[in-house]
Length: 118
Image (cartoon, rainbow, N blue to C red; front, side):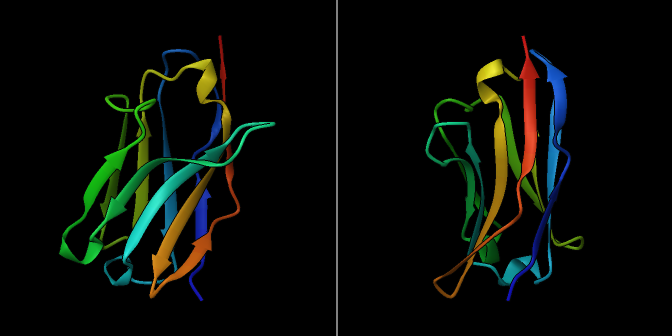
């Protein structure tokens, strides 16, 4: 069982930045892939950033809507996944979830709210 604990959400104004953190109970380099998803009210959950091939160092990928503004990264010694979010827009408002996959099993964090005011 992998535990994921997110933190770092909050209320910011458009154009500002936030950094989300996801601490894992498992050694991060044992995980196959991790990512950040978000779900806005009335919308489906969508992936905004992912990190695949983690044991090999990690390969990032991004949704078109956040490309160039968001950066996903990992800190191996801290077993933590980050999402640096810059130039935030009101449409980025959502609950952000951390996701991890290991041996074809999926794990989710509890979510952290990000609200961007215009």
